[in-house]
Amino acid sequence: MTDTTPTSPQKPLKIFVIAGESSGDTHAATLLKDLQTLHPNLQLSGLGGPKLHALSSTVEDWTHDAAVVGLWDVLCRYGWFRKKFRETLARIAHEKPHGVLFVDYPGFNLRLARALQPQRPATQLLYYISPQVWAWNRARIPRMARWLNRMLCIFPFEKNLYEKSGLRTDFVGHPMASTITPTDDTTRQSHLLALLPGSREREVRKIFPIMLDAAKIIHKRRPQTTFASAASSEKLQQLMLSMAQEANVHCPVGIRNARDLMLTATAGLVASGTATLEAALCGLPYALVYKVAPLTYLVGRAVIRVPHLGMANLLAEREVIKEFIQHNATAEALAAESLRLLNNSEVRNIQRSDFALLRENLLAPEASSPAQSVYDALLLPTLRSMC
Image (cartoon, rainbow, N blue to C red; front, side):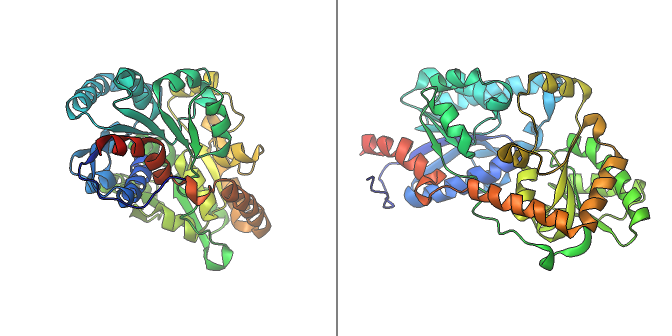
């Protein structure tokens, strides 16, 4: 068994991290904080968000610009991404880190991993939070096995998929499954509906107006209902408040308080993405909403090979929560489902029972924590070579 007693080596261990979205920034920061307890002389640099930047000033906070949704958004900013890609390669070549930690964000990170492959084994390439290629392009898995040293996956079914290709893989559990304690109706505000349109501006502009229109219908049919939302930044907060005012809907918008809202609202409307799994783990009965640019939707519909968008539905292999996608995401449909959830405690409790099973499936043994896997599988050999 590996000795995992925290040590204080004479030489630093350098890791370059790349996280392109707020959720990846959060999960990577948690992992690296834990890793620092195993290796206090850890030196971080790279690209991330405010939480990673707080760990190290040499991690550039780029998530506001990097977090885009869909093919159209990427095409519109292709020049910027190309420049950033070249800058990142140059930084890694200059800094010569012992390991590169890719965190989700596959459009950028998989291309970067491929470009960095010749630098192995001097630079270990580790991927945390597997890109969901199993949903849209499983043919990429064997190529990823050639590019990477190790995959740390957060869904149990992913481990077998990657190991079949020869890629060493650890199931480390979902980072939210062990940190969220769900609540039930006894501690929730009985008339509060959470409107959560996403953390990116383009998502908000596409989805929040539909949610607000649904709120107006709901209020007419159930006047006691109240509404609240959450924004990932002050800029988005101001945008959402102005949208709510223009729609004539009273909807307070907090900053970075989505989880608090998920734990206190009776039901919710949640944009497709990481937030839908977070809502399930919080025990929030909800409906999923997905609406993107027409080109992005057409391309996605052509390539996606799974029957559901929501992870709660994918893991259960059936419809646990209702999904309202593209042209089906209408104000009337969202209002009807919201009223069903608000008015029927039995429906809410059925969802929560399914969410409890989901949570159990996402927990990994303590020995398989992300930081422990990073330390044992990739970093410990590097430490030995430095001693």
